[in-house]
Image (cartoon, rainbow, N blue to C red):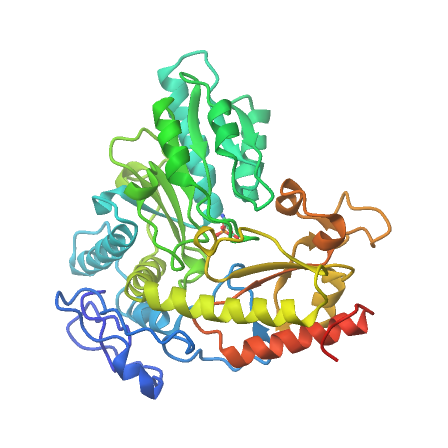
Length: 464
Ligand SMILES: Cc1ncc(COP(=O)(O)O)c(C=O)c1O
């Protein structure tokens, strides 16, 4: 699948049968021809020369009217990825476990996709990569699987898990549920005002001999804060614990390497970097004991039974190859867009009226994420009013269960609460996340939309 990625300058899957697929490739942008030339090894597209102000890749197939600044929510399926999946909607349908020609071809495609994911994250062997359905599954499996395996080796004892207070609900809700079942106990470690975990508290929370797993996300989905995973992992290992890292938000945006991070288990989520929704992967370091997730046939090395979706795996593999090839260029482009957004919004309001939530040091945050609180603004009302023109998200869930007070029942996100963001900034927080296809022109229009909405809400602005 990934062995011939170069058709009209775009990532293209070769059909697993001898004749080429008849589906026409989307017309690439003219500058595209220079982007993805064959690499010498022929496996992955070569790194393009970065031009940070221009979006990457083929144009998106739709002409959405609303500006899309919600790449942390999900990305579109990148056109090159869709193209790579095409053969698996048609003639390449075999069950990869079948020994005949159809099955073998699917197996080859599955192996190539697995290899591309393994290469992207620096895994030693493709066998360390298991395909799953979503990030939630990966996180649930990592925690429950490690806890169950630990219990087998410690009859009668309860495993302890350490996680940060700003993990995704796919970690925190799972921990709550497993604790209710009596399968584990856990400690959530606080973060500082910039949303980074306090290493001192993390070290203090470890219980050598009974802490089975430390789960720390690589990047936070709301603030983009990069966590000190390598440092936490060193402490965890010294205490005899496994390390799980949820890298859902960092893959495709910054370098993710399981050895640099010190991760034994790592969550990869396709729809955050150009693959379709419904496919993800869990990295399981060789030798790590993890209870199987699904019991049945021997698929995925007997760890997650069920016939694999070659279509979705092919999409994940193509997205992984693209993410690897484009990492530097994509990061620079996302950052150029994010920085322009940040500058535009900070300049639009009086000093002190805005607060950027997250690390002040760019080295400690994702290149694409801007979480900005505008004092006095109702972010929920703004997003509602702008729903047809600007797609973004807020730091508060309006009218969520448990909400209350004089702000229409809005509930502030757990992440902003953990960072002790002042309430009026939190309620006015917008999460804007840029991506591979964002344009500077869209960024400027987004700033203008937000400004107009703030004025409509009676917020003082600098720009008339
Ligand atoms: C950090 C993080 N982890 C896990 C997930 C869950 O992924 P999925 O929606 O594929 O289950 C998300 C999705 O938003 C996320 O941002």
